[in-house]
Image (cartoon, rainbow, N blue to C red; front, side, top):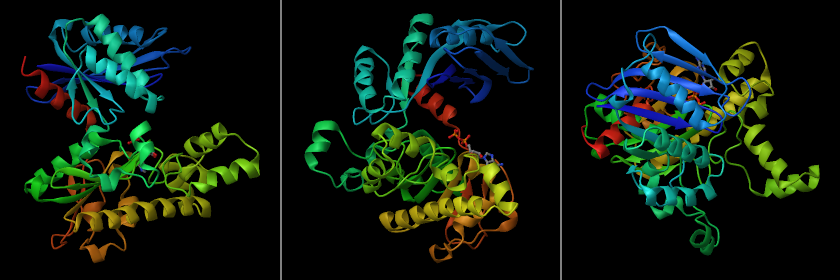
Length: 399
Ligand code: ADP
């Protein structure tokens, strides 16, 4: 069974073709600048040379056609015919309270997804465009929606209710939803496997630290709290997002700077986080480099970031009543030994003892604590695409 995994953004489309008999990656690629001048697809079939197609793509449908052509292309392709694609798994950002797990996409699901777009206007519409385009080009191929929010639907009300008038939750669905769920679930399951313990007996904090970053408390295999909220703006400081701030700052800023709410939103989403503090970059590599060269604001940005992650780990240990493991994943979590070391420093009281030698590694599944460390810290490269393909296979069945 071959599953095509699609992750559609507003102007990009990432895809992977996975053979689910052995979970082997057959091909992957990205279409960029969809609907913008200069669009292209970068395609790579495992074991073959990279292939770049520069062609105008006015919409997602045009992009998907080019991707499918690339997949069956004689020289650079991965399969002989599109008939080999048994199912398509779509990443969908926001499933609100409607979806507690992955679903087969049918008319009713599409209608509900349209409704969910209201609270995720940036993310869900491109996901839906991808769904409609695949349906047209590959009619009859079953499709599954895998939600970033679904894993967090197990959170208790104490974690997801904001201290606002309760009617606002009832009327508008204003509550914590959480994101990166597919990644948190994947690494939590993998951690249990690496620790050789049933996930039902573990208290794990998973730290997905990429450009967007979130921390989740996974107790007995279930998400019980997570740092992102109604939108992916809450929680940690991120590349360009501010994360938790005093909400009173918003109206204060509007008055002092004489700016509109849209401008404040723009500042909070695009100009804040480690970029805002450092003034250097939103990319942690650049900030680490600047800090090493003596840039104090770059160092401050890193220290603020580390502090916030550490704070959430401590808080979630309290939420779960204990801690067996901490997992680091995504761009920074997988690659920066400094970040992992700094975040864990001061957490010895939670039973964490980092082994510097084991921690000096990148992108490989590793336990980075000493053998006698009561609480284990793990580095686990995330694989959201594989998780989506697994859920797709499970729902569609072996075809
Ligand atoms: P997203 O999918 O949210 O865009 P990623 O998971 O790809 O993010 O992570 C991107 C972040 O990871 C960037 O800020 C980047 O600087 C950071 N990163 C990647 N490699 C390294 C590295 N070697 N050292 C430090 N940070 C890294």
